[in-house]
Length: 141
Image (cartoon, rainbow, N blue to C red; front, side, top):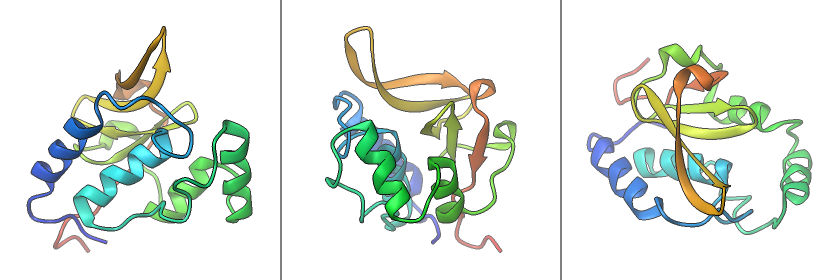
């Protein structure tokens, strides 16, 4: 899996498309948002087996367990490799804040959620994140 040469434009178009899409388990939640970003940048859909197969937090956890992952962090590690400190994240990398996956946009990251009656993407500083994963570039070893 490697980023397309025009990954920045593809990621930007993806973010614009889903920016106001409401949070919905199994359709537009944190894991599927992050996987969608990876798909936009690389063409690889890490979560293809999960889309539309659960409709609640409990069902999402069960789907992860059924697939052999104890946690979302474990699934991200399986899909993307060894995590790094979030301070080392670059634009387009996947990050984890609490139990949610998001996408780094520089000094912060986008996360999907529902807060105070608003549903869609929210930003958070990278120093609130606990892990990050690189999405490889063409030419990376």
